[in-house]
Length: 103
Image (tube, rainbow, N blue to C red; front, side, top):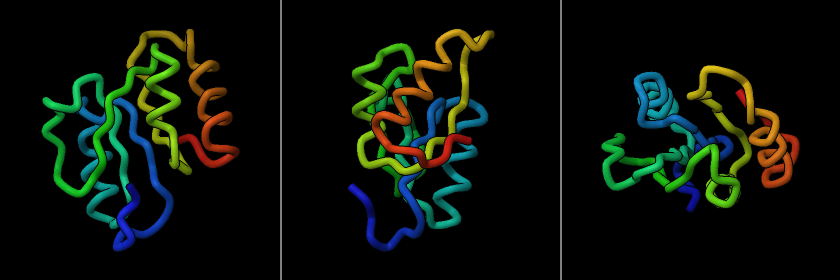
């Protein structure tokens, strides 16, 4: 759920528990944004308080659709060595959130 004390759109961060994603989540929260962090294992995410951590995997369309619910923007950290599958993820983002932004 969106926290009314936060500003701006809800932003989904994929790869939120990795070396870069963890800093993206922290930085967005520090700036007051509403953040949803996607993790394959939310129970071990150990992210800073204030965000919403949800189970999801870029390779699992159903979990991605659920993570995108209510999201307006996505900070997409791509964990693979090639772009195979990226189109499907961007399409899922468009279907589930509208135009919005993907960073």
